[in-house]
Image (cartoon, rainbow, N blue to C red; front, side, top):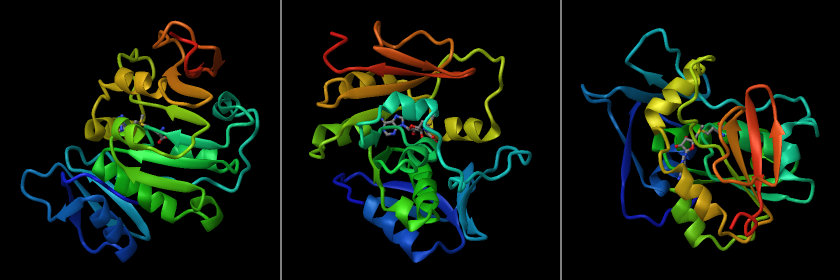
Length: 242
Ligand SMILES: C[S@@+](CC[C@H](N)C(=O)[O-])C[C@H]1O[C@@H](n2cnc3c(N)ncnc32)[C@H](O)[C@@H]1O
């Protein structure tokens, strides 16, 4: 992974990290520090996994990136349907812990994962490293703000996928503890609309935006919608929504 920024970020870590992970973080511009008294999170490596612990509440178990199981991803999977059969090179501009990116890669597509939160990017790097090499080879992780990544990108992409934090979701279903920690850590993604607008200026055949099922569409006219019980994928065609 390359990084072009001069800015440096840090995360609090405890204990030793595998060389592959610490080298990657160093190259990406992420500095590791010993937890200070004011630290609210720290990363530690235990039982072959990178974990993040929130010190605010002991009831919250540590989180880590999950690797996909052996089960084949069905072609009826809504995200895969929304991507379309022909689109094989995808950028996931809000990679998070990589659940969606690895689902996409499990179908043989190449996925560029972009994540801007340093601790989340490290968890994702660890998750990808634990995947079967055939799958891991299809994924490329960039620690970067996706807007800047897009502006500098020279890779020919077929489609772009965006799943920023849901804002204003009704409290009927409480988000999982993992999602609560992720949101505290990565923030509310208040700039999501900017990112979507930037994605819609790219030369790609479609932009897919994940929403909760009853949310208003972020733009007036998605060309298609794939609905599940709790979530929905809106498909936009660049140039179509002007
Ligand atoms: C809801 S989570 C994504 C979950 C992900 N789809 C998964 O399957 O694990 C949103 C993530 O997008 C990241 N994100 C939001 N806006 C971003 C941006 N402009 N550049 C890079 N990462 C971004 C946040 O840091 C956060 O980790």
